[in-house]
Image: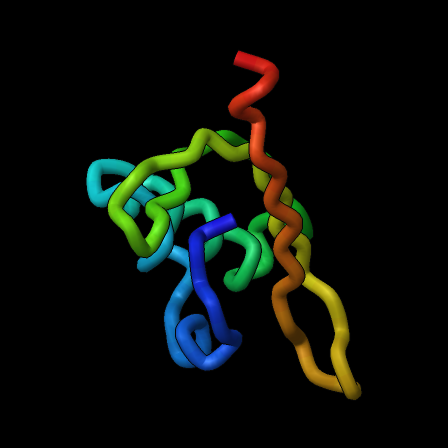
Length: 84
């Protein structure tokens, strides 16, 4: 969806790095609310920033989960271009 040709292009990147610059602060706050335990899940819409600098409207869900006994975040992202 973001135009990566290899998984290594995504390694080490934060989710907010893949969102449109004008929405990063809001997305970071939503993710922090899940990390801080204010909520166990959050949903919303944003624009994904592709590697070719095009923007894709997406809907997302971020959930706090346990992974190998440790707290982690799981994100689901869906392209909603066809719905708009």
